[in-house]
Length: 340
Image 1 (cartoon, one colour):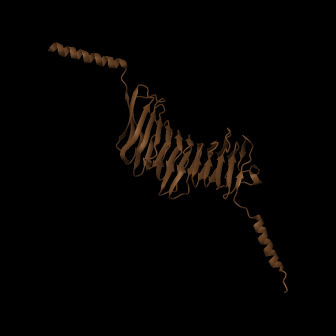
Image 2: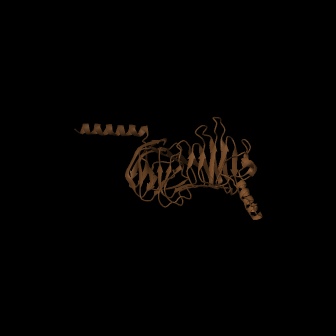
Image 3: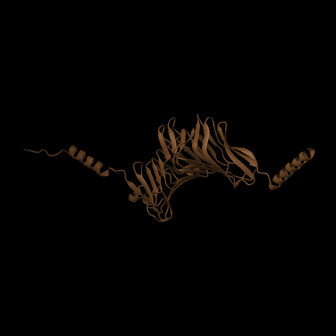
């Protein structure tokens, strides 16, 4: 049987197919190779394994004591893993600086072994389309951090690990900006002393804490809720004159399993009434417990007032006042006895 030799056209087609197959790149994990304990640019190919900046189909791994900074649009969009995988004191770090744009699908910060991982936003913009598993520290100092920025619905765990904390000292934190239905859920602690914190849909805190320091922050949360079976602490640490109010917008607020802790060690004012949390509809007007400490010369009590949760501070009478009152009471008693 005669076999025909392939034509030139067929050879070219086969060659092109082989070339395409050989050049196809597959999603992979790319470790960051910047210097140890040295700030190194994310957007430089030689700082990554394979001399290639990771793309949307890749996992970018910043490990051990590597420090990657982002000061431009790195066009990423893939998975970010930032962690120390040993038990040492090393901490991996990602810093999104002014001019930097870091978009990720999901992110994991810190590990279950070493727990050392730091993500900082110090002037740039970081966005996530999915959950952030946070076992150590995420710090928003300035710029913008947007969680679940592309979701439109669903029950979304914006911070899905209980071990870590998100510290907001400035900038803009937004969760679920594009959502019209569903929930945003926080299982990791949030500590806020400046900037703004906004959620677009029903907001749940579960087994964690929200701490407000001073009165420089703006906090607006839609339909603030606490899951009854997982206790939550809402901590208010007063500044010299006041503390930032949490504003719950929307249809209702439920704090049935929440403990309200108020600390006045930094307070220099006097008696008064302060809004801790305001809402349009406070369901059942109840909360699990309270602790008010540190207000020198003042008694404090947390209570529901309409749809709001308030702190009332009253002046504690001086010991001499008690003695005077006791003396007056005794004098009145003697006068009454003499008249008899």
